[in-house]
Length: 133
Image (cartoon, rainbow, N blue to C red; front, side, top):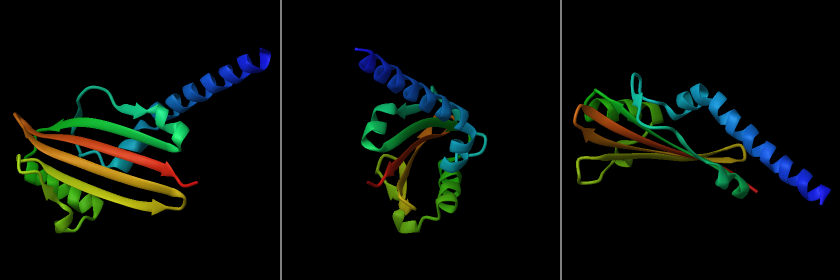
């Protein structure tokens, strides 16, 4: 019984430590994601803590900016070093940008969805870090 309680407390402590690390690392994560300059976050960041048990960390952020979609798209294309063929138009006026790669033992995926918004552009950023086993 004591071992189960200790294991439960340790697991809870690990979850809290990971959540705290994500919050503390938010400025660094925004830089890694390449958050568009001056973009304002809509709602709260979403981090999937359940994915940690599967060796991954996923994060989603939604932002609004007053800049036009073409300007924001050009910034992300330059930031992510995407070839023009990697930019996909969803046919609904939205643009989908994606990049993935292996860094040491971590598979890093980043996707950005850009859609026209009433006062500029809505930016949806998804990032996944998966540890190779």
